[in-house]
Length: 171
Image (tube, rainbow, N blue to C red; front, side):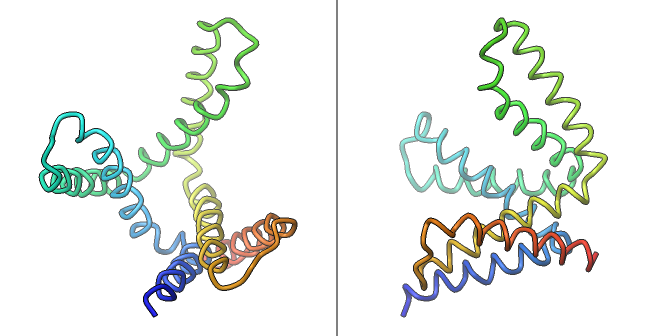
């Protein structure tokens, strides 16, 4: 019984995020920022703190602080996230130019894309919540049904496109 509850929760969370992600953006942002703060501290704490309970408490406190900051500084959080993703994504393409020029190019591109992201927050949130929600939905559905790998991407892209369309029409 318990093993069938978890995929059901994933499916429900995926549907809510994919179809209503922009409307519930504060909750999604809060949970996402908490997970980032908690995960980073779970990675960092073992280097400084040996007690597991203290490490978990510190991780929870930092997760709550990061989620609070993320909600208060929503546009900045989206801009920084877009900039960081662009910076890390174009790293492999910058191997053909000198290192110093590659770093400057990546930084300038990330800053410009981050600023554009801050100005275009609605489309970015709709697209990202559609992608995340569709991925979570399929992850939960894969526990109940077998999705052949040959059609997994087609199903995923179809759900993403439908959820983007639904979110644009309902907001």
